Image (cartoon, rainbow, N blue to C red; front, side):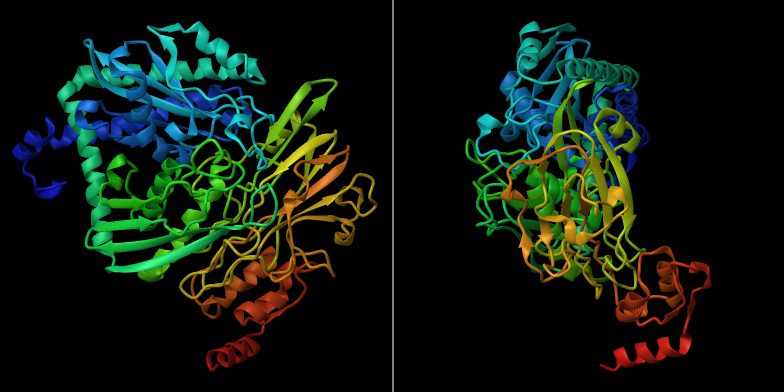
Length: 638
């Protein structure tokens, strides 16, 4: 944005630029956010599918018309990995369909990852909004569908090697026209997908939500006038662009690099996929260059250029402007270099895109690592690293086909620490911003039981502020099942420490076969009798070891189990912030009492001597002040 800063515009200059007064522009920008939250809340309350109802796996945006450059002045506070792609995919879809073909009551859809980002299960719904016969914007929802056909129920697999295995691809087309269903589109979908009745109910609910959003935007157009509404859309994006530019200007100029690793793909363990970024920052602009990132993977762990753009925006918002709104304006001072045919910018048909969250979350980690140096004390430590999903499906005589996604794996894990405090230990990966699946609902809908969820002592990166602890989760499968795993970030820590903090542990996966007397579900917990599935597993103890040999999950393309098998997941630990020997000993004592840190870990990692037994008498623990002072002084003199 050229010209004077927004706060320096007088009332006349502001009105001349935006077609409304400053007060009305502020009211309207808040109104835009309210519209999205209103119909998102309706979908969350009324959806049928567990991925929408329990997980919040959808997002909404508001888009302005072509005449003002397709701005996105508001996004919902939900699944962030959709919102960045929608700054481009709404325009891509509408332009390909044809703006001149749109009319009141239409809903346009599409799901091709190379056009709209993410994966084929994420169906994009676009409602054009007309007032007085004039197109004035779009209300949009992108929502995960439980199934879109393809070779794997639910779609989640790291073994697909061609787009033709991925599921139904919908080029831009009408789902509703003038408020009436377009029969051939509905038939096309339901001739190709599993769980069709469930999807139909969800899609009808989504259309109802878009109706609500349209009515509310029309109310604003009638009350304030089209010029004011479009001006407020431009204002919201201009304000966001100015905030991001200010945040960039406050950083020192420089060049920094960061990287992260995808351990493998689902084909074999012969190839790793490093994700790299180099950041060039000058004045109030920044360039994020992903050159040097690995070629596109041989299986469906790739992302597209739209997913890369999304993750760059999320990373910069997290690190530089966490309090500001996320609009398309935040990208204005940002340049992104994305070579074609990389794991972050795959091309069809071999560059299959489904588990896009694996590669793009590695990019988030690389950007966090690169900016840790210039941010200094404002750096954010690494998190659990990836979605780390576990997908299972099967058939039961009573209920027929079933699919379970996102409840039995490592989906909930730690965040990294910051200057503000310790990292949380039970969140989704940082770019999600969704809900934890309801265990009770998942157990009711699938033949599984979540029998254990607990934190792992000494798993968090130590620091003045501790990282979030790794999460251990056991899932008992009560019926025959086929399992697809996504464990691509276990070779090296994802929870990197910053500003002097330590790294979190690497995680892993184990399987107890049914009937084992050492199974956690039969009163035992003998790690030696479990089969290592993924991660760095010490052959002597069968437990995690940072430098231990690495177990490749893909040595079985699908893990088949009989009733009463148990999978155990341990997530990566979150990174620490600051010198751990500066952590308040009282906080270390509380960590030991709460099970985050062992007595031995308190001494080794924090230089704090704890006396007592945290298992039998956690309230009786105390600090040996003299030993603590001596240990910390000895460490400081090294």
